Amino acid sequence: MEREQEESTMRKRRQPPQEEVPNHVATRKPYRGIRRRKWGKWVAEIREPNKRSRLWLGSYTTDIAAARAYDVAVFYLRGPSARLNFPDLLLQEEDHLSAATTADMPAALIREKAAEVGARVDALLASAAPSMAHSTPPNSD
Image 1: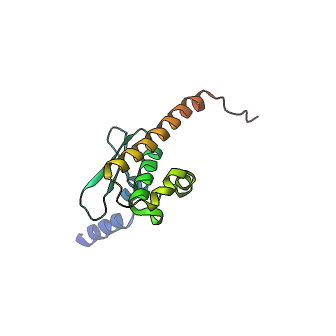
Image 2: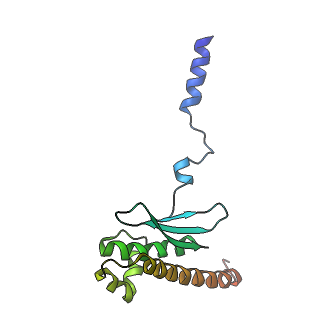
């Protein structure tokens, strides 16, 4: 009797639940340096080099805006060798290229520039969203 229970328990352990999404997939962040608040806003922050403190980069309505803000900050902090979410987009902007040569830029200025880019991207995506919602889908006949 005990052996039957043990076998039954072992069978249950071997079979993963089929409808459940694995925890590591459900909580995976789409971009580096960002996280999502419980109420849906996306926030960006970065740890300053050689310090325990974090640099707050802002709160955004889209994950892309938060990721762009992170990219600006990490580029200013770590230079051209930084791992970016959107490397092609950042390198297209001329003013960021000169930042690579700037050493010891103040955290407040980095925060300001990152927030500026994040807000600009948020505004662009917000203005594009209503126009997409009102457009008619192509006829598939």
